[in-house]
Length: 203
Image 1 (cartoon, rainbow, N blue to C red):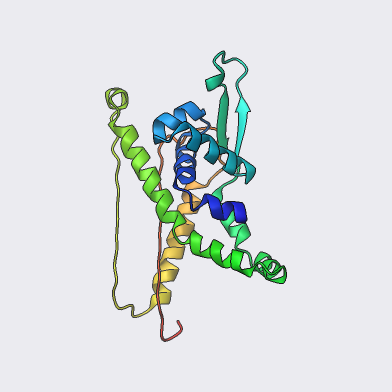
Image 2 (cartoon, rainbow, N blue to C red; image 1 turned 90 degrees about the vertical axis):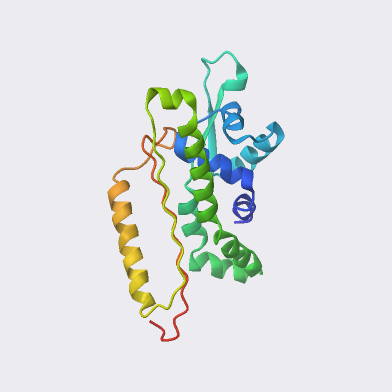
């Protein structure tokens, strides 16, 4: 949890993770070119995420240039790890060990994770769609929908149930098989949602 708390606060880590989510296993040189990160920042971020078990790497022995022989890829989904690290059992254990503050920090940091990943993936998709070689071979269209509302909610519980039903439909539609994180996504769809309500009626 300490390592993950550091990772989700570091913009370079989330930029790298977002790229690997979309495009699969990649060399550090390609990651630097895509993200604009310095060499030192790149390898520091890769080392941290590898230590936390988020990333793994493999070497292509057929590549003569060693700068392009190492390929990094996602080994664990951050969102799935969040569910495990946010379990009541783990929170109780941390409290028994006098580390309740670590759990509280983890929960605070999680608040910004979906929005940050959404921002990075959007920027990457727009950047890739604008490249000349991509436009010439097969024009791509990036669609972005953003909604923000603050209003009186007559039944917040009903709104929450509707959003949960939509997420279940989305997962059922797009998670038909286990993903191979080494391979890129052909037609990426990025979904980020946030709902906050204060219900005085307790519904």
